[in-house]
Length: 123
Length: 108
Image (cartoon, rainbow over all chains, first blue to last red; front, side, top):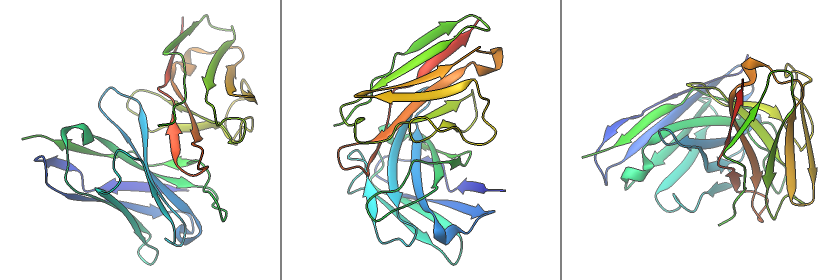
């Protein structure tokens, strides 16, 4: 069965950095695109970033572009999100999620999600 | 930036039909997806590509899309369907994802 397990969250001061990880199992990780989606406490879902199955293409929400970097290691079956210059408004649960298919021009919406890891930005 | 508009809440009696709308200018050319999220849990995909239902999702969940509006219908809503429902699509790039604000469905 598909399993996605996030880690790396915690309490961090404004302006600092974190690297979030997502360990995948139960499917051939290198064949699937991956998304990061976040949810601030008591708020709705916000799409953050997307990476193609081979890592060749990466896309970001305007709210994180230039501060966040998505990457993956297909040998380790692991997805990453490097989050820099953190702000209070980045406080959220960060979910990784699998895209069932990527074509040459887009990746489909997530089908399986992890439970998420909480990032709290506070001084 | 691109937005998908959903009503914040919908209430329905058990056994009745709940309809949740999602409007967006790019919906005529991009698929709509629907997620159910219960309190403290990860989202679950209930409709993909406008109207397709993943395996394991009850038949009472259906989706449709016409023009700039997509609709999730829960026919014969059950108490266990109480949750937040989010529509998802992509912006004009066809790549960057966007979620609606979410609709809280109450069944009572």
